[in-house]
Length: 597
Image (cartoon, rainbow, N blue to C red; front, side, top):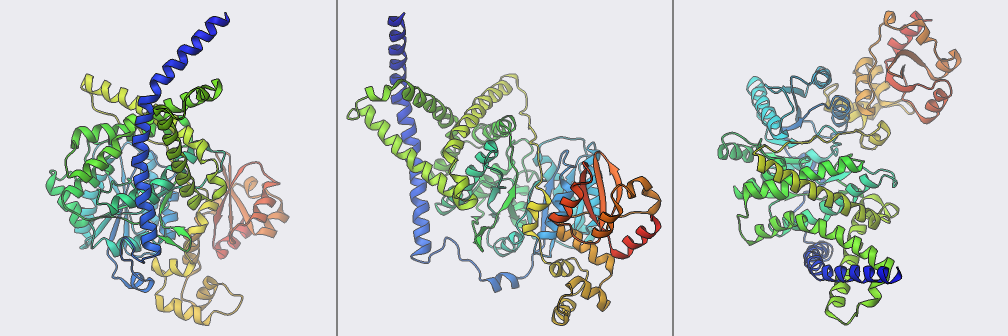
């Protein structure tokens, strides 16, 4: 029996040793490639710090603020996004520090809940416009975007205006308040501007979402900057991408008016390549202001299944379908970047197999039986050294965005990422081959979206004065006068109401935008007495709140003051229902309180 075990182990060792040479060469080649990118990235940092030579010349704060405002259209394609789109629009309209933009939101006629949510937003915000596709969905995202573009053209014809740029976003995106200012500055010189995209920070225990944090922190602070510097085409990230109007019209002329390619699973990736081939300049713009990277942020998939589904689509689209559709055209630089985009077809499975072999070697002490002076030992030592450098770079990128504590688990998440990516590659190859053998079209798989809690959004809110002037409630001159005459201890909004420059209703509309809270519209006959008295009278009197509705396990409460942690703790002791707070102007609140007493 013991002899058989030894024989099996020797056989396993021989198989592993036979695999190590080709695996080592593959990993070494890929590692040297990544080290080259690291070296250029370090050179860019040195060039910027020591020689004061930034990759692009940036405007000063005053120049940026005083630049003429181009009109920007923000496209948001939707399919079954009714749970997030209302919050997305409300938060971003409250947060964006730019006053010349419109949202165009694409919806399918057979998606009733999303239609209702967007129509409610359209009624609330004058710069939100619904674009209903002429056919049922879902179709590809590109098809939805093409119909949004047609809706924008119709809106321009009706209003006698013209949008100078188009910015693409998704239903779960948090747009940085200053992104549009930077797009406004650069879109005249570039046909394509990509704002970095980052995963929102989540607890360290959420391992799968942490993979996205590490991946995007590295790719959107290192890879794309180097790629742009070396003259490679910049692939769109799908969100945070701005296109000049000239670039979009050139795409339309070159492709029978199909700006976004409906047959592509990754139209965002392809459009970057198409614009580069048409000769348009592209810019990736990693900017840090006040210690924070200006970026579009969002939640990514948090479970293994959803992450594998999304990365399977990315692999099919970028590594297989784009290869089939676009080949390897271009100069040697484009060959290089296309190779980097497609090398995951080999590198991901190889990395997973290497991890398995590494684990086997540790468990069986096989590494002690390999001579470090031999060629195989030298290859393994070189790959190990490169992987240590690569892990350090990835850890550093993650630490820069999410902090040192979060980054410490980056090596663990890298192993999990190997599994996710390798599984996605295998599924992508199978699905692609199956579809091609049967002559069937490739099918887009939707990613489930979530939106951050109100607490996570408050860090990006604008000041109330910015919202009042930006949304047209008051003129800038009125705001300046109010700030100059504001008495100590009196809030700006209250002062404007007392001056007669602002109604109480308008003030609370602006507050609801700023705080990402709904504004209550309540009639006394719609409030059941049992609901109005569901909380102790002493509690409602102290906090000046009124319960007015119970539905779907949620208690809706209206109040005149913004909720804080003490308020929420006090309420939590009296109800097990989920609490949703609504703002209500004081006059309406007191009238309701009197009628329901």
